[in-house]
Each structure stands twice: as C-alpha cells, then as structure tokens.
Figure 1 (cartoon, rainbow, N blue to C red):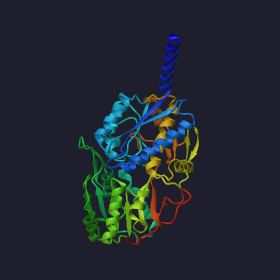
Figure 2 (spheres, rainbow, N blue to C red):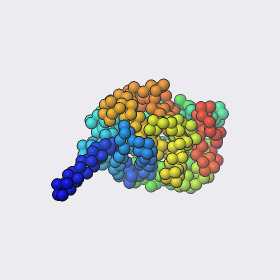
Figure 3 (cartoon, rainbow, N blue to C red):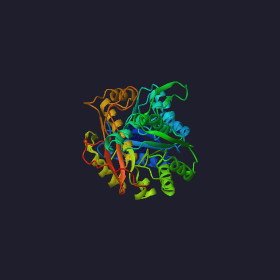
Figure 4 (cartoon, rainbow, N blue to C red):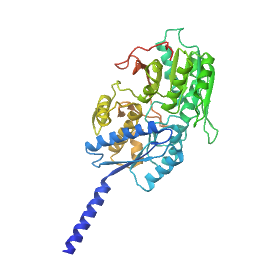
Length: 424
C-alpha cells in the first residue's frame, strides 16, 4: 500500500513538473508605484488582457502564458535588477519592455547582454536606439526627437495661411522623453550621455522651419517640482501664441493646465506631450482642456486591423474586450503594451520557438507586405529598432472628448480641428 502511495505521489509530482515546464513565462518590470505609476498600472492592464485572450485561445505554441510582473517603483536600478532576476532566476522565455525612456535606457543594456528581444512600449528617446542593440523594437512612432514633425504638420495643414501662431513658449520636465521632443522642436544636437558622441544634429528645428519664434524656454526638475503658478505666470508674460508643455507624466500635464487656467493665459494653441488619458480631463475639467492638442500613437476610432492568436483582431475588438474586462475605455497607455504582447506572440509563433535570437530574426525580416499586425497598426523596423513609415495620430480635446483630428483623408472618424483656443 505504501509503495502504491509513493508511486502515486511521485507520478503527481512529475505531472506537476511537466505541466510547469509547459508554461511559457514572460516577464515585465513596470512602475506600478512611484511617479510613473498611472501609466505603469495601465501598461500592466494591457499586458494582462492580451495574455488572458491568448490563453483563452489556446496559448502560444500550445503552451499557456504565465505573465510575471514586478513593480520597479519608477526606479531605474530596481528595473535593471528585476530584468536580471527574470532571466537568471525566473528563467522567463521572453520579456516585455517597461514604461518611459528613463527606465528603458538602462534596461536596454541588460536585455542586450542576454540577447533577449526587447520590445519597447514606451521609451522614445533617440539615444536608446543609437546604442547598437540588435534586438530592439519600438512599438510606437519613430524617436521622440521627431515628434515635432507631426505637431508642425497640423499647424501647416489645418490652420489657414498666415493665421497660425508666430511665437511659442516651451516648458518641459528635465526628463529623457520631454528633452527628446524639445531637441527636435528647437533644433538641438543629440549626444550620447556616456560618451558625449554626437548622435544627431536636428538644426534648425521644426519650429524654426515653420517660422515660429521661441520667446520662452524653461525646464522644471525631474522630481519634486511644485512651483506651477510662477511657471504659468512666466508663460503668460511671454505673450507666446503657442504653449508647448512637455511633461514626464499625465499628472504634470494636469498641474500645468490648471495653473494656466488660474493665471488666465490666452494662447491661440496649446500642445501637450501627455494628456490623452482620462485622468487629464478628470483633473482639469472640460473647459480648460478644450482645444488642447496631444500627439498619440493610438485612438479608439482608428480602424486598425491586427491579429491575435492567429485570428483577425480589430481595434474595435480591443476596445470591446478592454471595456468588458475593466469597465472603462482604454487609452494609449494600455493599447501600446497590448500591441507589444501581440508582437511577441507573433514573433514566437513566426519563429516557431522561444529562442530569442530566432524571434529577433523573424521580427527583423518583416516587410511592408508582411508586417507585425497590432492594434497600433502595422510595424516594420529599421536596423536601430525604430518603426518605419509611421506618423503620430494627432488628437484634440473638444467638449470633453478626445477627438482624432489629423491626419485627414486617411481614416474615417476625423473631426475638424478647433482653432484658436478660446482661453482656459
């Protein structure tokens, strides 16, 4: 009897071990707490929903996916340690990237060291993609330095000639992402901080090209800034017809907008690098948000078609699944990681293995006619890992709704651009 019991126990243990071996592990370090927590939590939702839908459809290569998420507390050193742990202790088969250029830049060297495919959801600073990492793939529009191209395109294409803003005030967080966008707008040189090597010379800059003169420029510290009213008063005194606010978080966008309302600023146009989230409209209210323009990679009304678990999966399908799971509409902070998950799933299936070198080869081999298909549209990448042939979707808050205003003529659902802004 004892022999039978031991045999049965051994069999159960072996079965459990075999089942565990069949689990496909994917690790993600995210800022669930700390200064980047709003976007970090939304990234987590995007990864979790995608994983759930894949598992319901049978998994990847017949294996259920186990998502391992760790909170890096918005701290680069913690993020580095967590990816090291994923690879060396948890023995993950693949990883998803983290949020923000601040965290992505140091994580990139670790994942490159272990030859892991690094699918980046949010980390647009050009310096990340000039390190020579082989298997780096950015799941957004090109580097942040080039964002100004799409901002200026709206002014040139949607505002009657001669009526656009002639002057601009640029205020920004001293942050990887914000500094990168500012560099393109101002025409600065981009350098590798470790070697001081020049990566790119962006002169004369998108604003100068558009005939817009910068009459004020100011940065606030990366952490602990709270002097928003004085900053807003300085912006108002500059008389700038266009206010450009480059923030590191949605909360900073809220604080800046509230302060501009308090001081009674009256610009013709406001562009913010963040603020597409529901937290922004809830934080500032409908009237102050009206007319604020924000670039984004995703919008719920854009009819992108993709695949998930080998079957057609539209942007509308994503919105429906997200609402069913979480009871709210998604925004880009959840759509982008969902797309990363789609890309990794397609890479594993395409390569037929979780061997990251082969996954990377498959991703690099994508073409315009055979791309990775996601809820952010189609992706192919250059040798640096930047997406080819993609532009931002330009949105604008109008009567409490974030409407899709540019590009025109490419998709249905575009609404007329509102200009000039009628105060805050």
